[in-house]
Length: 292
Image (cartoon, rainbow, N blue to C red; front, side, top):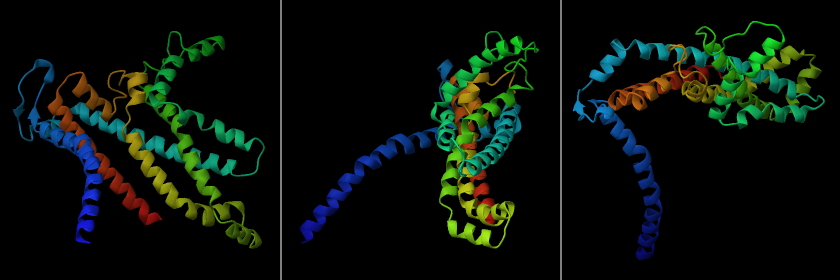
């Protein structure tokens, strides 16, 4: 009996070891190595040796690196704007397409198209459409006798271009989640509200919205974390420019690490980025849980 138990335990351990080894190799080891690099100065392009500098990288980031603060400011404002608009539009679309209207299934499918394409493909497509010399948008404006708008070279417009593309691409995510939530709401409550003479607004305010709040919390959290990692649209459409008007924090880390090859500094930025994401996620989760 004891031998059979030991054999079963050995089989379980044998199944766990490959997965555990993969996790250690692909997740734990890179994180530990990048943490150690964040305390060093290592400019790989010059083949200079790694030098331990302690907290100097972090001190430089917080007190001397204005580019870091600009990218952080842009990223936070970007996330706040796009997530709020996407939630509002997704809620509106889900509410309308939950009703029995003509071509409802057709519209449900069409609205999902932007989300199905890869983000980098979306970015290059919009870059071609908005090209100031040969883009389709410019040709349409010319044919209508309108002045050409420099979408990708005007520092005041480029942030809104990125936000518009993001909203177009990811509103379907909110729409899909909220539509599924709408369809799972109990019909009995609406029948009772109709018997009591409640208006459509009162029904939505006191029945629909409270029931949807848990899924709204989840969708906002997932979308905010994803939007905070803004990279593909910046890389494919604006390249962080003009100047640094659309440089997100993740794109700044990419620039430092893979264009300047200052790997120690890039690792320090990455750990700060991770800390900010965790803090914002925890803050959102705690605040929104109180509302549920």
